[in-house]
Length: 147
Image (cartoon, rainbow, N blue to C red; front, side, top):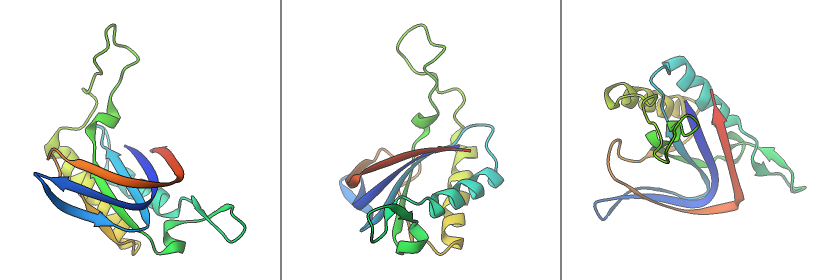
C-alpha cells in the first residue's frame, strides 16, 4: 500500500463536471492498493498518515500532525501508484501488482474508516471514477509513505 500525502490549503475532486468532495486545510492522500495488501496494513498506514508531523509549530518546524491541527483528509484512490517501471523494456508501466477493484475498494474504505476512527474528518473521491483533482499545495509539502 502506498500513499502520496500532500499538505494542502484546500483540495477538491470533480467527477463528471460536479464537485463530489472538497476540504479546506489538511491533507490530500492519493492511495494505491497492491494485490497483497491487507486490512491491517490499511489501518497501520492510516495511523501513520494521521500522525505524520508535516505541519509547522510556532517556531516553523515540522512538529504537528493532522490530529494536532484538526485538519481534514481528502482520500483519492489511485491504482497507478502501484506501477512498476523498473523491469519494463519499453516505457509502459506494469500495473499487474495493483489490486483488482473488488479487492482494492474494501481496503480503500478500511483506510478511510481507520482515519475516521482517529477522529480525522474524511472526504473521498469516487472509487473507480475518472476524477479531476485540484489542490493548493501548502509548502509545497509532499511525502510518500509505503507499508
